Length: 122
Image 1: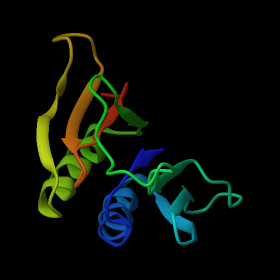
Image 2 (image 1 turned 180 degrees about the horizontal axis):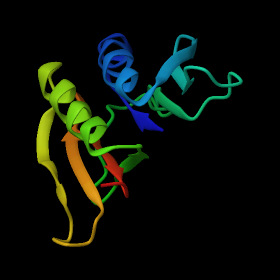
Image 3 (image 1 turned 180 degrees about the vertical axis):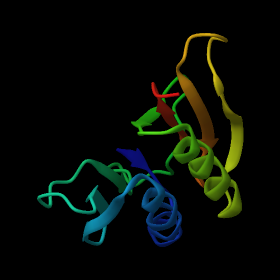
């Protein structure tokens, strides 16, 4: 779960970027949107929400949400789409650490939340 100060904008952002990971919005109300597997049983795996305390959302220092993917091309597409729809790069696709075989990319969403896509596949 990540917080947002503008649910409408966050929904547009996450509707688009989570398509890359085969996730779709399956629930929406006045304070949050829930996303789950496109072809799954309708279970929510990720939320974007207005903060319960009604204060502005902030990205936590050292906080990160990570999504595992099946391929490096999906990680790269996640980063590309994230930037195209207004996110900011925190590191494009690459092995971290070098030679580890684990491939990551990082973006900041519209509210400054750090979001990662990664794969263990070559």
